[in-house]
Structure formats: structure tokens, C-alpha cells
Length: 205
Image 1: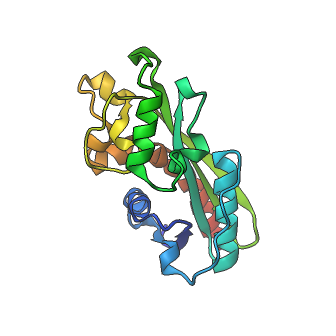
Image 2 (image 1 turned 120 degrees about the horizontal axis):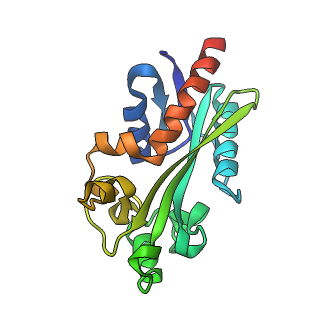
């Protein structure tokens, strides 16, 4: 597989993560690499709706196959929240420290056995005609008591994957190496599910 797709994001860390996972199989352009267009606001009630909307718009505006993901954290004790509001949980989009601090405050009295959570990634691929397919990846774990680690972004420093608990080291997602995270993460799982779909679409193009 060797072709070009547009990833509908301006998040450099997310773009880098997806490029690492896809490797040289697909050349991935971000929104900064294509002519600018006015991006639609995220108004969907689910990760899947937001991902599909972003992929359709990027494909329509660029005339290329487009990938888009919507991802976030679903905390059991908060009935699945922050969910689609993960990036703006504290009221300002992309303020990772404030979002994390608010989350930890909301869970301060929740015992360890009830701090289960999952990172969720809905990944959509759309063609310029508007046809879209969406797949979902999840990464189970729990919310720690304090941030740890400097790798990753978002809630990574407080998310302790189930694999870390099973290994007995309790490392957060932000303490994993990029290769470890790519092999385990919600985004990596969704992308691996998407690869056969993407291959089929590229073969048809």
C-alpha cells in the first residue's frame, strides 16, 4: 500500500502518532498540508458521528480519501464522561492540564476499584463522493491518583492501562514508549482494524 490520504486534524501529536502507526504504507497529510477550509464544529453526540462528519468534509474539500478520528476518555464512575467533551472538559478546548485537574478533582473520593476507564477512538474514512465507514477501538484501564510521565498528551499521564496493572508496574500511558503505546492504544487498535478497509479503497482509486 503506497498512497496519500488526508487526516482531518491540526493536532501535531495526533498526526505524528498516526504516521508512526501507518509507517510507510500510506503518506498522511494533515490539514496544515492542504489548502485551508473552514472546519465544521464538533456537534455530534458520539465519537462516531464526529469522526464521520470530519472525514466527509475533509474528503469533499480536498478531493482525496480522508481519515478522521474522534477520541476521548470514558470514565466508568462518571457514566462515560468526559466522552466527546474530553478535549474541552474544563471549558477551554485543548487545555490538557486543566482538563486533567478537573477530572482528578471529580474522582478524588472514588476508590481505586471504581476508577475504571477506557480511551475510545472512532476512526472514519471517507471518499470524495461522501461514502464513509467508521470503526472503533478501545483501550481499557483506570484513572490514577496523580499525573505521571511526559510522553503522549491529553489524559495520558493519569491513564493506567490494564496491561500496566497486569505487568505489575502501574505505568501510565505517558510513561510508555511510543512503540509500546502504538501497540496498545485505542488509536492503534482502530487503525489496525481500518487498514484492510483503507487498502480496498486505495485499490479501487
